[in-house]
Image (cartoon, rainbow, N blue to C red):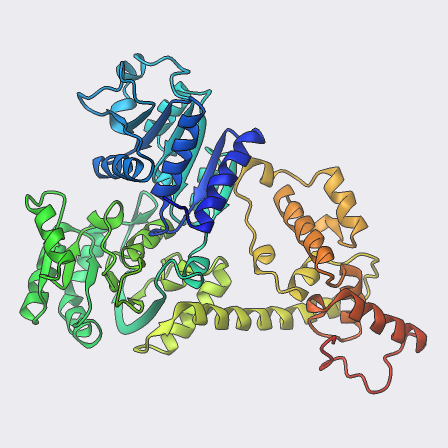
Length: 527
């Protein structure tokens, strides 16, 4: 099986990290982008080198899926370490193992600490738990690869305590742009659901409290669905099984063909098959279908289980992002959850890395309630508006800084001028990134014209140095050119070519350091 370009990039990046000495590394791919295929190919590469590989997962469906994809994509068969099944004495080089089984001390005692050369963790956002750590600590010499869908920054900070590096990340916007995932249109439904009384449990909204808050609105939600998704194949996520079953009945009374599945459903496989084949057009579930279930024809998702966890929110929405013949986009219905807290995940959090942009995008989607809005276009608009607001604020800050004469450029001015969202919104995740900048980094930043005192960590320093190197290679303006020209009132100097800026500065110098006649800094484009 030939890998897609980004899958091949991920595969190569993992081996690069291992060769550099990072034993535990992470790959982040959005739901629907084939992470199982990626780690299957990496497994094949390891086996070719004579290594023994353990693939770990926390659910039986994921183990079966991994074994099936491994065989179909590489021809490799695997043994199983789960319940009464043991891989010991098997001649297969690959083992798919249940975390719940392997975590037991009696089970681990049967294995030497060097039994596995490589461990691959599916849905790696779960690996922070003690059960995974027991296994990793036992096989402490093995190289480790974790694969997960897009986590939130909180997840990344936590994962940074387990993994030493992020080998590769493929973002949802890039996957949509390159045609590997379906475009997403979000509709804000002007139905206000009050979450102010909902408490928090284990870092997220408590399901039973959400259920109580949601119950009075179920008939209204069903009526809104008639307006937007009667002719679509829809998956609805709800907080509890009893609510999921109640909502199924309400939808059927409204004319939908709705079904419900939960962990105790004896006919779950049959219902999922019938839904896939079109016998039902709505499938209700209580968080059962967040992982390990694929139905590419789903073209509408409704999240009635609000969450603070971006990874979980992405998993739910990801049930509808796969491509399918005849499918033009995924429709995401978003209700106006009212909460005094601001950590609630909304459509903006699928695509925005910066919380400020996400907040602005959410406000703008609410202002256009009832209209389907492409989330990429909405994010671009929100980002432009936030940049404009920041520039206004920066102008005030720079005015206050005029008395501070520096030879070096303030990093905030540099970031704003080159419109670098990834620099402005950067949050360190891994241990080395959080440490202070090295003396070498500080000297390099000063040499390149950046005032280093406000760079708080090594990760940000590396990001800045990488960006400065890339800009030099692309022939773009230097920090000192940016500082000089923006002090003269020119705009967006960070987007200019180096040579154009140099020629303008030469003209200003020749004019006794005054702006030549005919040049208006406010409108000059640098061309």
